[in-house]
Image (cartoon, rainbow, N blue to C red):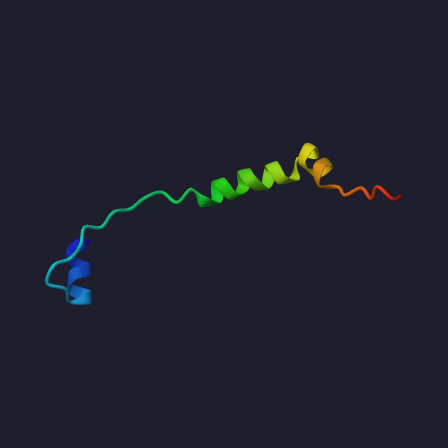
Length: 51
């Protein structure tokens, strides 16, 4: 694959290609679940002390 990239972008030296798993969707889902939890929702409910 590195050779093909080198041909297509016409570089004399092609950098190494490194592929990493993108776990940002998993992290976003985890944070979303936390924010939707009853405990956090309760903390986010605003109470007006003057009421």
